[in-house]
Image (cartoon, rainbow, N blue to C red; front, side):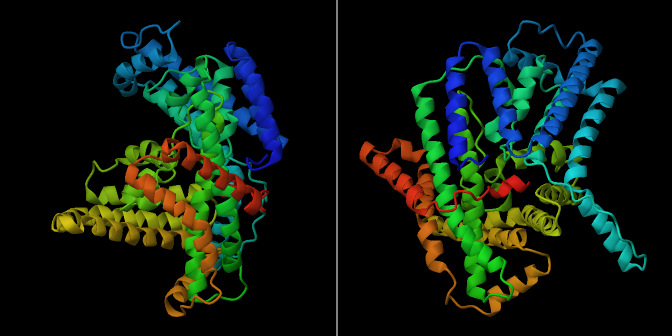
Length: 506
């Protein structure tokens, strides 16, 4: 069930009507949300409902057992929380976190291992089994040990990477003592399967979202207004901008013969806009749908193409994933606490695994390697860049900033070429074409400019005003014209409304 379909519009209308009718009955509303979320996920393939249910039950039980043993081991630092609100429980546990984490008994660690093993085992089986088996077979073949492996060719469950990371963060946070385990299986199941963000994120944290599930929601007129704008803007980015640029991107990357350099460059720029509008469009729709039901989903994109360096880019792009990798991988590996060499290794390993998270393909691994190299190099030269920036005359600061932004945007686009390539072999050929056989004839540049220009103009204004909801602050007439332009854009240029979101495959 796609957000950009009439089926979803009818589904959301029914669900929101039932949720509104049960607004004062929390248990009933949460039960309705769970049924709706499972129906939404089962629409893709009902067979995979068992996987999300299994992950939910495993992590719920493991979290309970970890939490129970934490309290029995640390009675003085963990007073009874029965009858307390989720916010009070979280606050009390944060006070006791250091002691509980430092003195964790073996039983607590055993249940954490069960949770991690089960979740990563399911994810690895469905997403990476064939990839690693094929890789091992290729390696053996190169050293003269021929092997013909039997592949499973299983269908990848949609959204499995997102909800797996979501449930993993819950169990780890309970183990660390950051939050208390949730007592209600219903509430926890809603947290895992909440349909607006289930199949393509953002990756929710239990500490932020579970309290919203556990308390009565209030729906205000501002929620409906803000949510409607986010849905409209998200649909415009996806259906009008991303889907139309996708045709130009697919034409170039899927060509049987190597295109000329101009077509490659335009296709790479078009893909940079496409993947941003596609993924951030999904997030905006998800946030808007949740907002209209009384929930707040965290921001996942914050003008990423205005980043000046790789660190800032990952604070602006896919924020929920980059923060997850930072908190549950980079920092546990040692972060930047063990010297420059270990920091470089930790950064590179984190980004390689982040690339592999996107899919079982060497292009994604190379994309992770590329961004790991950017982060390592930036960390090494950062003091010199700061010294250079202090030498820039004040009257040239704005120009200097835009040069830096434009330069890093092009480095990001090199990464997008790696990410989008059909194969590893295609990468050097397209890079070579981009710098040796440049021509704008038949490159699709008019298509790129026509669809990207509205986005660029609005985001420049958002950047200078530091306000992602800038349109909501415009005068009534300007707002009305903007809404009309988006609506008619959807009607006139939304011809590929059946195109799935790019991140559904991850």
